Image (cartoon, rainbow, N blue to C red; front, side):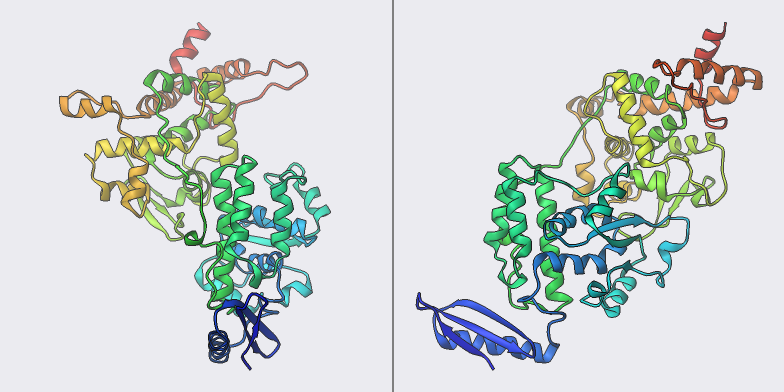
Length: 492
């Protein structure tokens, strides 16, 4: 039965009731407006079904985040990062924390819809995490990870020595105190002013703009999920919507291009790595325009077709597969590598390992503010020059879906633009690095077995740690890349 109650300020609050749930909304100017609103809400509940679970008036933000995580995170590639942000609310609320374990891409688990989505305590699993909700997510895509609920003590114990963990801000900060208040609010009570307050506090404390926007995105997804999946707050405007908030502007455009001399220094520094396939992996990223995860984790030797110059990507960032054309330089790098079994990774390394080696190489070369992802910018810029600005063709290489995203990765300098109109030879970014990598690898193939054995011993001596008591590294037998000229000069 819809009702209306007059408040002290003269406005009216409408209240709708259906079975064991009720929803109220203040601020109506007349009693009739409040009753009409409540009647429409009750009618919607009767036609579309009652709200799931305990409803928005009895469920806190933290609890709703936990319920949403158990349903959605197993099917998301970015689940580890999202879990860290959700865990901030859960830890402050004294609730179990989310522990995410990636499923191995070659184990077959990621495509098995019968695998359990998440493991949870009985009182949590019996809430909104229904089998129907799981079925919806299974239909949407394959499993990427396993989600467990663990205590804060166990979570901290597992996090020691592991990659990542719960993002821990200063517990005494004002934003953390307000986050605790926001997490304890009922879903029906959260307003856009509450979310804006959290944004302002985070920015005042010096948090990065992108970090703040990610936090808001989690709340925005929560309220969208509550309305669509749980039939909560059908007429309420999402309090984390961009239209309701004053969000900081984030400029993610980046153009970090090295000179040929800097590329040469970087290549020489990468040659000093313990596993010199690192140089070929870096050169591949600069030549192929593929994402790091695609090149290092997704593709296997069985996906490579050198005759046609294509790589079959089983799953990209958008969730679907695609055929990736290869440049001549990318094909040359793959021909140098020893082809493995169809299920084996092409470069035999992980993103974290290559990232650490790349960072150390940059330090040795005296190059600052350069990241692995910048190589994708290099490749897109180089391809745009090679393709004479053909955006549709460039998108086939990069995998971007929109022209706007492609243009964000292309950086033509004024000197390069001048070279285009004057007919001068234009040196694309990454060309020197790729040439040195191929030259060094080709030199390695030209060595005789005796020279190669001696070169590996010399390489181990050159890369031996200077700290006493540490063992000398032994280069991998099949992956060491040695410059023929440098070797013979040293061995002479």
